[in-house]
Image (cartoon, rainbow, N blue to C red):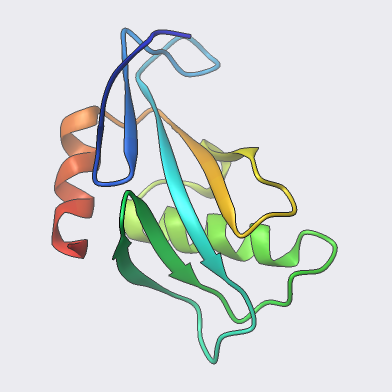
Length: 113
């Protein structure tokens, strides 16, 4: 993996980072998950994390899957481009997004503040 370039809007941007296929960039997104909500949606920024509410219960990975679906829709990427890097059972998680440039990721998340 590349060196950390900066933390901005809950995104850890990787300098010279590449996705698993070696074809593009990779970014980490810090997420605060609120399971059991009335509907799944991006709530906004919470400090350095993106706050996401999901209707799924926090059991057997259902909430994690729901968060990846919300992120994919929000970022305009395929679900397969998003993976959980850490925080499997915690409310605070880190997700990897493959194949999205830093500039595109910033643009898509800038309205959340």
